[in-house]
Every structure is written in structure tokens, then in C-alpha cells.
Length: 339
Image 1 (spheres, helix red, strand yellow):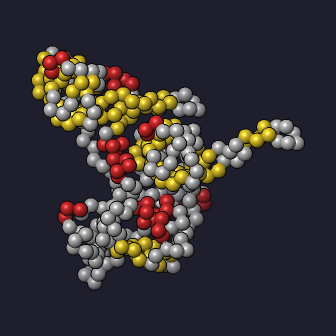
Image 2 (cartoon, one colour; image 1 turned 180 degrees about the vertical axis):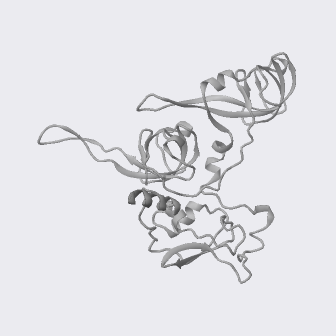
Image 3 (cartoon, helix red, strand yellow; image 1 turned 120 degrees about the vertical axis):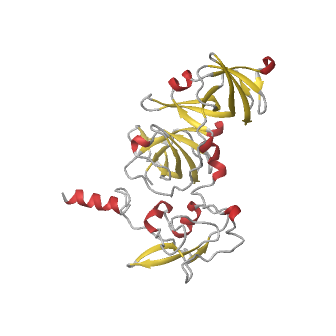
């Protein structure tokens, strides 16, 4: 009973069952820091904390400032002590408004800082989906372009066959198929956004659509899916998973063999294992095999910590993560676990 009450209290305080230790400040932490354009929440957390995924436990919401949950370029952050515990908070002026530079806080760039660099993950948040074979197989497909062309782009007209999914559609192409390397379970099919278009006519099951945007040339066989118009979700914060998670990196974007900082990877764990956007995971490099000189046995040496990644897009059975730190070359198959 006491353990249950303790677990409930820990959940209420946003302290995970795998991270009971208090956040440890860096020895060279600043007392105050002014946020600049280009900062990420990971950068800022790393200035103050030895382990940046403890940010939710040290961040203090100041009710006297506007948008207290968000951090903008120009905001002044300060290390304070509340009930004897270190906390980081926005600093307010006497009238309760954060002291900001009018230039920095103009309407044109009045957006909160992201958790991690958006230029590294933007296409995965907006133009990549994980779908089932059933969904993609049932979707309408491109027959050909106007004047019998087989390759088309923005501004062109194409013809497709199937049931219209919506007036505005996205055109997607099959990419990677993800399978769990340990169990063989199908985890999902990656579908990449190629173009967008508007359905302008229907003749039975033949659809006519005008392409409004394209990142690649549209090909025969590309599939039409509902255009979700997903918005970039950047409000997640660095955190540790709230339960123990162990998995593997199963793919890397771009087909590179050596994985390093700011590479996007897929892992074989998702929402069903409790992962959420913002979760930080440690990357473990499997130990080498060595021959025991006494017994002549082959012995596997212990795994070594080799990097960190942050999960930014979560699906049921798998997730995408961004490599934030790599102390040695990483490869597909390396293990991931709680930090």
C-alpha cells in the first residue's frame, strides 16, 4: 500500500519511476541566461543541468509572466531556489511582464523555441507517415499525367483511379517497411509525401486532380491519401520515459552506415510501450566479443553508453528520434534504453 501511494505521489509530481534522483546542476551553470534565436530547449537545459532530460522537474512556471509555459527568444531565465530546491524560471519585471527586447519579440518571429532543431526533423513531422499495408493498398493511385506523361509536378494535371478520399489530397510513395529485428513483427510502412493536389473532377472511379505542390516528380502508382495538414508540434520537452523501455535503432534516414549527431533514426518502440514525444533515450553500443585466454570461451563484453536521442514522432509500434549526442560512431542495431 505504501508503495502504491508513493507511486501515485511521484506521478502527481511528474517524477518518473525511473528517475527519482534530484536534477543535478552543472558546475559551470549560469545564474541567468537570455534566450537567443536559434536556441533549443535541449540546448538551454544542457546549460543548467548535467542531465538535460530532468528539465520538467526543475522548470518553474511563473504566473506573473505572459505565456509562462513557453520560452521565446529574448526571454530572461534565472536560477532560483524555492523551498531550498533549484528551479529555473522566467524573470518578470515589476509589472509582471518579462523584460524583452522589442526587436527580438516582434510579431514576425514571436514563436516559442523548439525542443530540438526543426530543420533536422521538419519533414518527418509534416511529410512522413507510418501506415499499414491495408491502408496504402486501398488508396487511389496515379494512372498517368496529362498528355500521357508518366512524370509530373506542381502545376500539372494527373489522373488517378479509386474512391476519392477528399477534395484536397496528398500524394504519397511507399518507402521503408519496418519489421522488429527480434520478433519479426510488422511495425509499419513509411509513406513519403511527394505532392499535394485538388480533385477537380470525378468520372466513375477516375479522378482528375491538379497538383498544387510537389517535392519530387509524381509517378504512376503513387497513392492518394487524405491531406492531414499536420502542424509542427514543437512544445514537447526533454524528459525520461515514465516506464522502463528497451529497444533498438532499426533504420536511419538517408541510408548512411555510420550514424552521428542530428541523424534521424527509427526505433522499434512506440506509444504502446509508453513512449511520448520529448522522451530522451540512451544509446548503448554492444560490447565486442573476446576470447577468454584461460578457458578459450567467447565472451561478450559489457555494452557501453555511446549517445543520446530524443523521440519526436511516436506511432503505436515504433517512433522516430533525433540523435542529439554521439560519443562514437553508431549503427543500426544499437540498443536504446532509459537515460
